[in-house]
Length: 140
Image 1 (tube, rainbow, N blue to C red):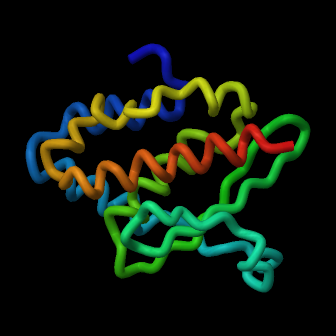
Image 2: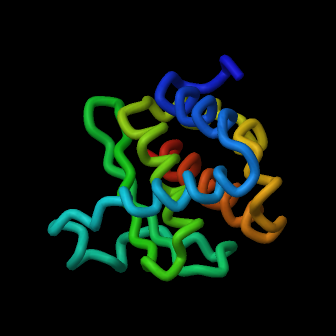
């Protein structure tokens, strides 16, 4: 598990201590922490990248400053598992360089045991969110 950035590694380890439904409950706690869009993006929703592979509407915007990436998400509250995973990614990846983000294993979330509490379809959506984040990080 040491191939993950420190903040993301810590989150993965925290999930590894959860058993069964505790994992889902912990994921839902993350959903509550997803920040709203900053005011400067609320009026520029059309500039956000949509993750079409997700059943729920998921929009991502990446800002780069001094070689570091910060992500912003717009995901409805009615999609708590997706919001939870987006928060995990935001907290675990914000402030990293594009190369660090691109290097994150595509299916790192298996280390969290989420496959025990989420459907395959949800897991595919989670992977798609990370893939879009990597694409945005790699863009000029």
